[in-house]
Length: 149
Image (tube, rainbow, N blue to C red; front, side, top):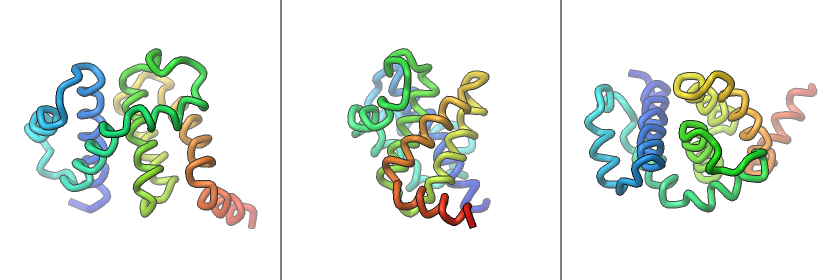
């Protein structure tokens, strides 16, 4: 399995873990154990999964503060899937600097298309585009400049 596919699976499983945490409030070890039992987990990048899940769940409040200015309703009114995707992608934008912001946004859009509501991917895209311009200003501006040439 390619590294890209293993990384995508890691994000999917991290999303499932974050979603489970939002709905159940289970502890991280319980969630990790549960997700590790899911079919296909052996094909995921386990190290990335652990990093994303633990990093996101350890910083939920701070991550929500980052994306809240870009949503037009209270965080608790977001669907659990959209909220989990925004938490995950915000964590990656802040802490996985080696991953290009466009990759993070594209992966989040794909997760929203697979797991979210009908237009959830548009909402996620809009929020993350604005957030990336804040968290990754140098990278976003460089990409814009390159696009003008």
